[in-house]
Image (cartoon, rainbow, N blue to C red; front, side, top):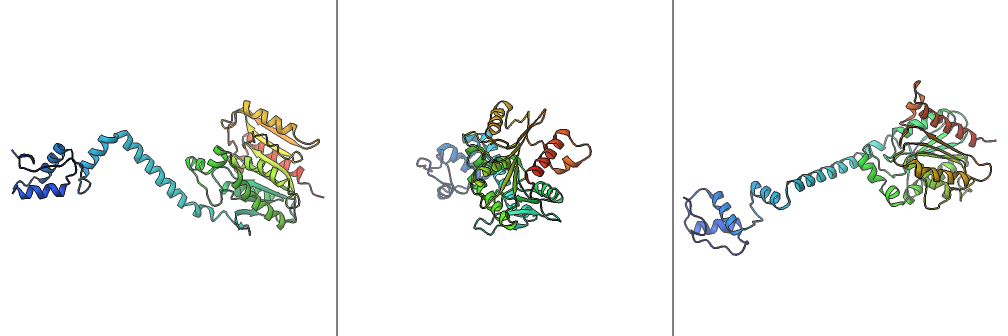
Length: 336
């Protein structure tokens, strides 16, 4: 039987003895046993020592699992994996956005945007604000369609260089407006683009439209932009299932509105949505349009893209929501 360290005369002080010290003491006692690992482990268990150097992986794993438990290890590993994935997704943003951004503002913000212009004299400007995924090919396709109908169409990058294709990170991107009611940075980026486009096209009337988080940004921009009519000529605002302010903010009464929501929207339940819609309706100035459309059995984000609108067998609600918006745009962008 192999003698233990105490039987060999090795003394331990508390739990401060490291593996190197143990080996040195063992050598001084002329230990000839080659099973060094067995002796080290026995000495560690008897002395309750916790070495910080030369610890083998078996000892490390056992210690950690014993102290914090296997479930905690699994959760920790998952958290590290999610963080690594977030970082990788962030690194891919530039590659995703570069093909979509065709111009940038000349201001310090240097906000990127996509712009599509019609072949003939433009009838006005339509700005399409993206969903919570950030600027994507979806908005570019809407813009190209609008340009084919005679409008200057613009899709701003209001997230300032950030986008994703995954819901967890999209929620992170909208954490300020969606969860903290802080809309300033997104509204500022939108304002930056709209002012520059307005100057480029001799203050043509502009409709600001947005989907999801973009609809909430468009509504809040209307209040800001309408106060600077010398810079921006806001002719209307279109909101597709966007956040309506609940803090008493009254959207500019003279700005026409187009609002489209699903009655089964999990983000904006009808019992909470309806009073806000009624408020927007009643605060319009006399004669100012507030076209509100609610669709049965439709949830949040029920318009996937322009292709879903144009296909022959398009969902009636999807088609009605978009063609209704196009009719709204044609009405409010009527120019002399």
